[in-house]
Image (cartoon, rainbow, N blue to C red; front, side, top):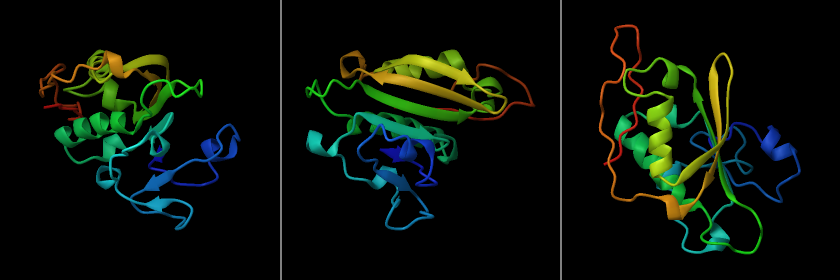
Length: 171
């Protein structure tokens, strides 16, 4: 599943690794090809046939309007992965992208704090890459590593007037 799909001609769609890709966007530029849907309103799948091995969430969470909703979106993503080993041999993976300043220039979030949040949700960082403007991660999801009882509050980590307010809160 690709959350925030802008084009059916992107690399995920054209690479031919995947048999099919469920593409979602709030405002589809290709109706009928990209489903126009708010991921937060998409029904939670009840069976593994409706769940996914791979989810892409590229430049989406940073547009979510508040810190608690960002946390809820990350937690919700975990409910869309297939459960257990379904014999297909695929690990459950999340490709995730944020603007680099969300991690490098935030009062409330940095690489370490974001990594802790993702770890508590059951994600293990497989690979990370940064460019001049973006931070890219590939995470493997393991539901056995989840800590469902943790909370993350808004806490200033890096004071300064020139920093942004990007934050993720989990309650």
